[in-house]
Length: 277
Image 1 (tube, one colour):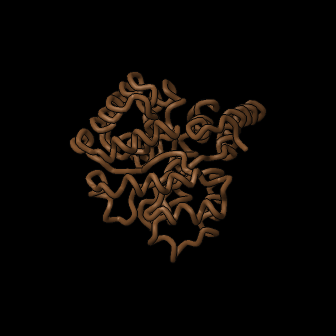
Image 2: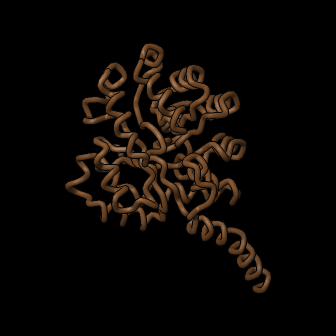
């Protein structure tokens, strides 16, 4: 009887322990980091890289207000940091950039550095997209330079961008923040240039348990999702390790191939690197 019990426990350990261990070993590509000016006095670049190392984050897409924050990290880790150009010179630009004619020459000038893989993250409502010459300029620059646009907008806004600028790849921050798995799936089917980043989505794994609708979505479109932390305020750095521990927890409930795609492969593909370095 004791042999049977021992065998049963051993079998259970073999089933579940390797999954957790393999997930802990996954390299992570954090697709949503900001290193904004308020962070600089509290967290040096060396401290930020310490957070990345502890969380197992091998690469990161970084956009910052101002862009100097991104350059500080890129200067310390050019093989790990993927710069994306945020069009906010100061926080005041967040609500006005789409109507500000000085933004386009600012962005165009900075893109001459040749280090950026995208433009964003920028916030915009669906009602502001049609009339914005700045958005149109971003789309033209992205198409000409092979960049993606990184937008924080709702489902109506992202669909409008995809319809107006079908030649441009779109990375959708937070998958719209509140869009349902069903609606996200519909958009992914319709628009092949769309990928979704899924930070700050408490509905994915409420209470630490992966929601079944989200799990089905990830399995159906495993090559279209990216994970991120979104350090939009300084206090988010205090939760950085916990955020990635939570990702690893529910990634362990996915098949290995799907988990790898969400953890890092999709982001590498987005920036044009097919294989990890």
